[in-house]
Amino acid sequence: MSDKASASRLFVRITRDTLPRVVDKYPFLYLERGRLEVDDSSIKWIDSQGSCIRLPVATISCILLGPGTTVTHEAVKTAAAANCCLCWVGEDSLLFYAAGITPTSHTRNLQRQAQLASDPNMKLAVAKALFSRRFPEEDLAGKDLQALMGMEGKRVRDLYIRKAEEYGVGWKGRSYVPGKFELSDLVNQILTVTNAALYGILASIIHSLGYSPHLGFIHSGSPLPLVYDLADLYKADLCVDLAFALTARLGGEYNKAVVSEAFRQRISERNLLKTATTDIDYFLGEASARRYRK
Image 1 (cartoon, rainbow, N blue to C red):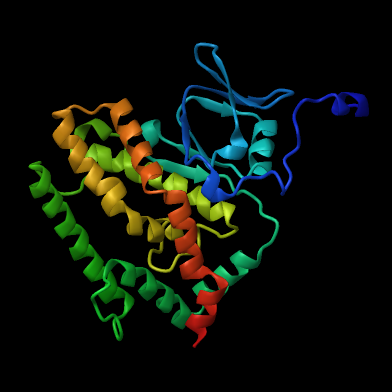
Image 2 (image 1 turned 120 degrees about the vertical axis):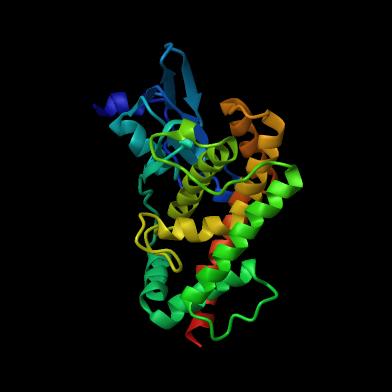
């Protein structure tokens, strides 16, 4: 592009001063069957009907790209400059496939995370801190990771049973067969959808703060262990309670629009972006790292 053409562009380059904070951004936007590209003014979304919608990516934390989507090189560059995470997901966010890495200005958070994750004692200390949020009345001293995970498994099983009784919904256990979403009952369908969407949002927050979703403290052997570590802090309210509440309301038939709107509303009401940002700093921040070294 010539200097003259470059000067005439309407797109204003995003700078550090104009970049919104993570806590001020809209949580997520789900797109499917269309094209994400850039013209002279902004990123735009062209759907399968040819309609064009301009997207203010600087104010969006995460874009979830569903089936039938294509994205141009320039759109990826622009989203990265705006600190907007791109995630590739299945239909209705049923599966989380991958997330684009959003570069940040400094690697100090990643370096600190790597130091915490690579030291066995500090790694266990972070894991205990995460578990203490879910078991505030329990004395976790002397417990190893296996014992803590056993406690967590029982907590989740009891939570499912309690919510089923609260909302008067039948419950036969958590189940999902990849590629056969329709074979699950309604509670499991909603759990699958909301869990995947939650993973996408948390992945975008982690990337935006300069951490890596691949270095976890509780989960291992999975693509996004830190995402799963954090998701367990919020699933009870954002996913499990919502799934049983909507099942009682929907009368046995999955409704994509109702589930998406209810989940978006709950994310906004609970201010997940601010909460997760604060929590990540508490568990992995500089002050926490000093505490774990003691």
